[in-house]
Length: 251
Ligand code: 4GN
Image 1 (tube, rainbow, N blue to C red):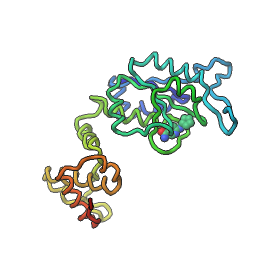
Image 2: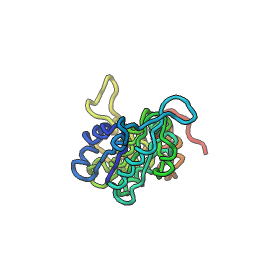
Image 3: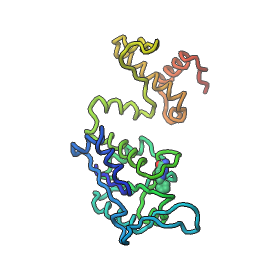
Image 4: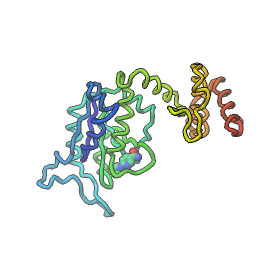
């Protein structure tokens, strides 16, 4: 999969490309990440990429021409069928489902804006989709773009090892993860749950599924409402709530 990042600060991409799972995916040739700096496409001696907003007000706006030229250069380098995605608080909210849809594309062109905003005509003419990673404002689109790239790269076949992929599958069920523990067996008086020391693998698997379901129900009821619970899940959820001293579900 081929990512093109359009950004005034291409150094952000190096940090992602230089570490961990994404770094390894790039080294192994499963993923490429190229950067396009609008400043390199500005034609004036000062290489201007921003200007004052029409209508007045504070801050600056990213100019159309240098940004459009950078997006077009990125488009020319990208495989056919790579959509142009602009990171913005005004966008559709990104989730694991969208990550899965992006992961089957040949490529993705990500536009990271700066300043108070991007000239709306750039979005009208060059952008296929505005995407938000959540309801908060960042100083630039770069960190949001890196979050999207990271989530998508993890779903590219071959990027994760078998163990990591199996774990991934459990989140793909649409629920939160179960709790994790490692040595020592007691930390400041807090023991590891007995079941995890039992060696009974099917019992451990059931406990983890129950924890995942119960924590999801308590912390993110919106996630649980999205899925149809099996009879076994209904029963595990009742057990969890009882064990935690919480009121049983009604309706
Ligand atoms: C994306 C971009 C938040 C998100 C951003 C988000 C940069 N902030 N929630 N900031 O995904 C003005 C120009 C704001 C681009 C934009």
